Length: 268
Length: 263
Image 1 (cartoon, rainbow over the protein chains, first blue to last red):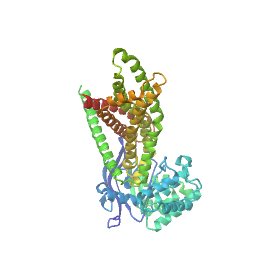
Image 2 (image 1 turned 90 degrees about the vertical axis):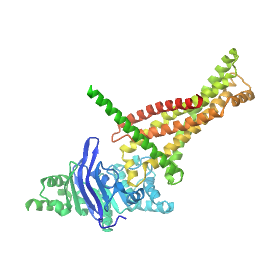
Image 3 (image 1 turned 135 degrees about the vertical axis):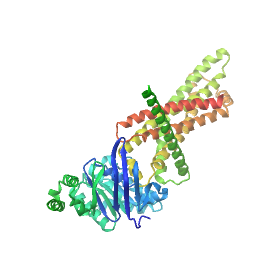
Image 4 (image 1 turned 45 degrees about the vertical axis):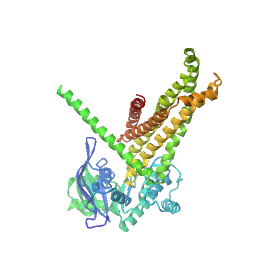
């Protein structure tokens, strides 16, 4: 269903309001399948909202969101469920279900989408994924008993547990230690190699430089630039340069690729 | 003057749109409840239902027992000491049925549930919205109404019916036993007169009231819980609104049902 000629998620003149404030202002963007798109922007620029609208979690007040050309709003209940079963969303603030344990947080999506799979098989899957990411605490803990970093990790694991083909990741590496960030980076790289679609909102220069095929630059709820990584980074648009250099200021410490590209674009 | 009229007009329009929204919300709950009952739910929904009955029903047994016992004892003692002086001793049974079964049983049970579960449900849902837990359900295609609301809707309604029955048992029978220590009555005579006074209409109206109150409380609490948009400071506000509206709606519904049955 989600493999076709118009291969991707497209937003057409999408606007979103939070009360009287315009969070997204007539945004048109494309998130091609099998590629990694990184959404960049200052805090409060609307990156999280953009991801949620593209994932069909928030419905726009104006405009259309299409998956392979089909408007999300016109999908049947069954089609929408199928789309959602192929999506995994890791929230910026983890958004773990507070009345469930860590184990139940991972089990619930599996039980919902794989009702006929024996519980032992689901249990093995959860144990494997927790081991893979070296989750040290008790899986019977509630989210409130975990550190912020652990909650972020479990949120990411919950997004991965259904092995979705489209991953929406909102600041997936914030609050995490370097070892866990490395592990996540490896996982995301392998997801990308498997042809999964990654749509990531991040400030991380590491994630951006190592994963991004495409960049979408947001400012004040509007897209100032979008395109391939190199195109956008070489853009002469002062707003793009401002956003990228500000957002990725840490790149000077961690990574030189982006700065080099930025310098290239400045000297050209 | 025109500004005042404009404001009044705006308020009316907002009120109408909110009424339509609430009606749509209730309709959605009914549809999802139908699906839930037809076993299209998955295991977790039933778990939430059991937990809701446990919280709303089982944990409220103590307070219901105390209130119904005390109320029954007061009616029996007062009625049995005062009414015979006017040659109307048997009226005590009619008063017991009217107060315990028809009126105070359902409405007091509803008030207790509003105070306990109505606030808890509105607060819990409000918190779930602020912490984006509802969005997490949506992201997996789990319908929050089917998974979160329907079990609470059924749990509160079932609990209210059972608690009302329990209130009646304690109010009518338990209070008789307690009264024995203060004002001894013949058990056979008491039961005979009580059952003779109790009509099907009384049982039916009590049942209809408790079902209606259960529906009102669960729908109002969940509706206001979902009204929270982004801030934790909104949560106590919606909890207060949920309680206030539930009280008003239950009292209005109580009056209407009484009018339908007894006028």
